Image 1 (cartoon, rainbow, N blue to C red):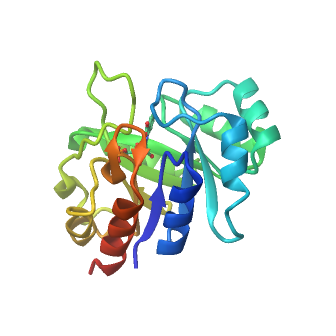
Image 2 (cartoon, helix red, strand yellow):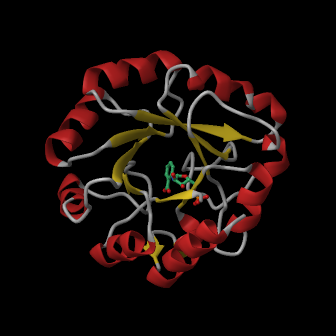
Length: 213
Ligand SMILES: O=C(O)c1ccccc1N[C@@H]1O[C@H](COP(=O)(O)O)[C@@H](O)[C@H]1O
């Protein structure tokens, strides 16, 4: 059964909805330009609601050490998600310095992008296979854009991975069926407007992912 990450949570009711429906990963966004960004204090309150066994993931984009230090001093995260242009060397450095597993996002548009998944698979603990953001996008993820999932058919990576990018309650089962993704990650597909999560959509998404063949 596919595991589910709900990303960009900001409200206690949506954390409860995700936990009750069976999410395995909950994402808190620390990228200031995102409509889903939370402060350390907000995230600490949400993180306290999460039982053992469910991973609290902090999303960062090209973070400096000072940001990681200040967030980790306040929020008990279980994993760091790196969603910018962090190099493999920077992934290794962050893992060593902060002692947490790292999930590295890789943007995919064409098959030329796929070798990055091999490179990052040697250093990251998990891979997040997302749609490549448009060149002029403000956000490097969370844009509700999908890529051609057929690029992933028959591929295997060195590390556990999640599929992301434009997933919704309506298309997630087909995405899992086609790619055989062991897990999926969603942000805008469970929202009614940017940054506005919806408990019903969260439940529908998780149910559809768990029922996927
Ligand atoms: O969600 C955001 O605002 C965001 C900002 C900066 C980097 C990544 C972000 N979100 C991640 O992108 C994937 C895909 O998003 P979507 O479902 O297509 O909206 C999401 O799962 C987050 O991990």
